Structures are given as C-alpha cells and as structure tokens.
Length: 244
Image 1 (tube, rainbow, N blue to C red):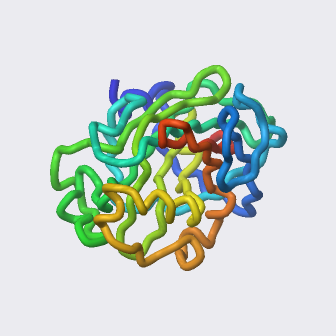
Image 2 (tube, helix red, strand yellow; image 1 turned 90 degrees about the vertical axis):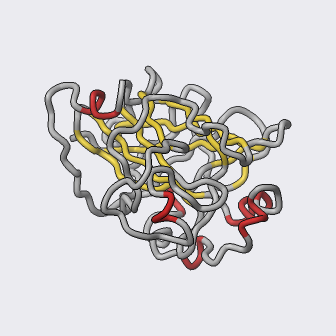
C-alpha cells in the first residue's frame, strides 16, 4: 500500500496546517543506555511526561509523494545503523495518536537523495520533480496504539549549506498536521563522521549553530540518542501535533 492510498483514507484532501507560537516538545528516550542530546521524558510505551506542540519547519527539497509503506528504508545503503522511534501525540490532550501516517526522507552518507540523485550531487539543486526511480532512505509507517512507529535506516550524511537532518511529515485523517525536520547533536555527528563511509565525504560546512533552519526550532526537534553495543544507534522523539 503506498503513501497516497494511506493519506486519502477518510476522504479528506491534503491541507497544510499553519500554526504559530510553538512551544518546546517532549523527548522520548528509547530503552536504557547512553543518551546523547535531547531532554528525556516518558517511558517505553510512548507516554510522555508532558504534551507540547512541536515546532513547524520548512518541508525542504526532494519530497516524493508516493513513498513506500515500510519500516526498513536503508536498502543496503552503507552507513551506521540507525533505528528511529517516533511517537506522535495530540498536543491538546496528550493522547497518543493511533494510525497517524509518518513520512520521512533523508540523504545518504554522501549527501545524495534518492529520486534526485543528479540534482542533489554537490548540494541542494532543483526540485521540479524526481529525476530517477531510486527509493532509498524514504518511507512511511503508521503509528500503533501507543502512537509509536519505527524506521530502520542509516545515520544521515550532509550536503552543502545544511546541518545533518531528517525530513518528516505527519498525516492524520488525510491532512498534514506536522511538517518538520529532526536533528542530531553536533558532538555525536562528529564522532559518527570519523567512521566509514562518512569520512570519505570530507568535512561538513554547516553545523547546528550556523544553520538558519535549525535556528527556528531545531533544539526542540533534536533526537535523544542511545548507542547500542553493536555500534548503531536508536534515535527517539515525541512529536506533539495539533489535529486538523
């Protein structure tokens, strides 16, 4: 089942929710272990200690509307394994949102986006439409009864002019209720980028501190990270959304 089929359930068209006066969001830590970045609240079920509205950010380039419904989006791309645990809750009631459709995409270790490989080579390029049929590092999932969904991917790379990030859209009842980006602490990224294949891409030109998009809500959209004994990571966050 593709993304288009999921988000049209209920007969609603897509509408972008414009919101203002965002508050900080709560961060959910996954399990036990070393946590790097983010504020830790909540427990394994996805319940957060407080419910807050997550900051909206620009959708950004290289979006494709018909992504695959799947939890493993890595497609054998090289990189440090990363499990994303995204919990979605109603910011007004604190209730977890079952059945929310979560849509993510990000670049590979070399800064390339699937679907726009020629456009994204060397940095952000045109976004008039897909230029190829690859689908790596893109996918959607529906949240469970606890408002939780998981993705298996790899730690993102970087490209010119942006700090490291993952794009995210959340759909409820056929409407887009959250448009945002997820971030990582620079200290952790520096450690990861010492490893292959990231070190072959050279030194990044933009960090959180000098990224204009990060400056508007990035600190509240930073993943809480758990390092695993296998060398990979689990990144967790709770996103509070306002239902359409």
